Amino acid sequence: MKQTKLFETQEPEWVKEWQGMPEFKQTESNKPYAQITFRFSNEEDLKQFSELIGQKLTNKTKAAWHPAIERGINSNKLYIYEP
Image 1: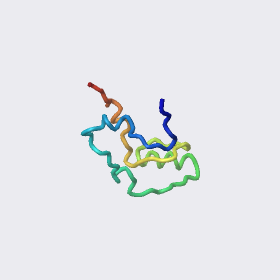
Image 2: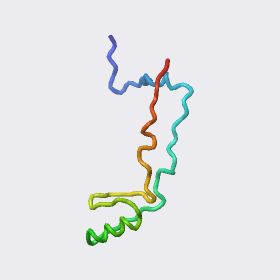
Image 3: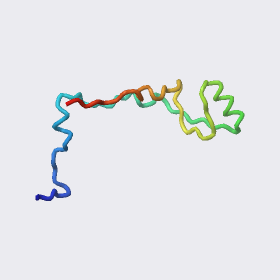
Image 4: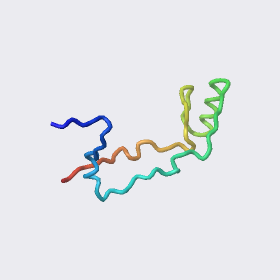
């Protein structure tokens, strides 16, 4: 039995199954147009801002999109392999 060397290049198994599939291209649309850091002196200011933009923000929130991004829109999608 031949042992594969650490840096020996072999074609991955998935390559033979990937025939006719579209190439994945990352679009720039996932990047924000602008990024702004807000700092709040107290909880009341944070709550007021949260209400103003219509999003739930807490002292643990690290980032948010505006308008809010709909999460889970692709959660009902799945891949089914049918040979």
